[in-house]
Length: 135
Length: 103
Image 1 (cartoon, rainbow over the protein chains, first blue to last red):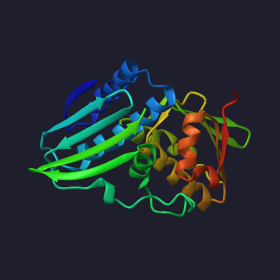
Image 2 (cartoon, rainbow over the protein chains, first blue to last red; image 1 turned 180 degrees about the vertical axis):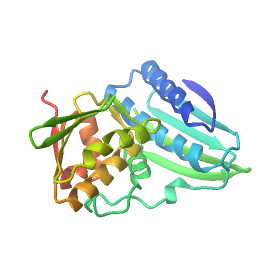
Image 3 (spheres, rainbow over the protein chains, first blue to last red; image 1 turned 45 degrees about the vertical axis):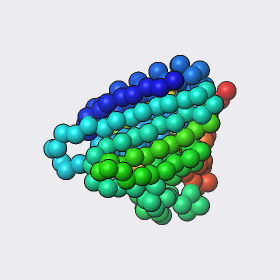
Image 4 (cartoon, chains in turn blue, purple; image 1 turned 90 degrees about the vertical axis):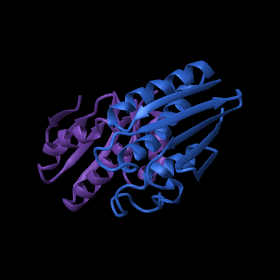
């Protein structure tokens, strides 16, 4: 399976992202829990790009590629915004009471926990985020 | 759609089906009246909730803070097993009462 989605950096596009993941889930016969988790992961990373990669009011393209051999599902998210490696963002510490720790940091933590592999590359002016999950 | 219900001295926030990046700001606004009351005894009823993104977790985190400052109580009820796992992963179940949905 190979599927591609082209998006604009607008928050309303997350609906299309959600549908894209649902379609992949159906095609690969993924269970409800895995599907929810993949939606969390992809929504998290795409919204990061939508909110932070480009200057405010600049309209830009984001690409999401999904590929699977039936054993592993790989997402590659790419944008041409400013260089940003989300894997370097500080994780939330689940051993500290959420009421006492800084707000946020949970998105990337969830992504790293759910996926088997997450890596970032800056290549030819693009941010490339690769995320793999055994299915 | 978020609903706020009063039951005796208790305030119940009944969530809609999703708290995601698109509607999180709306959800945060919706629950403000429940937080402004003071002397909080707050329950978030998640019977209808099937999906919650980290933007939703952030709001729960803020709500915990507010309730703690007011020395109130805050629990989540009827949480789906899938969402429970995410709450456990991010450290919420260790520090607040989270009750799973009856099977």
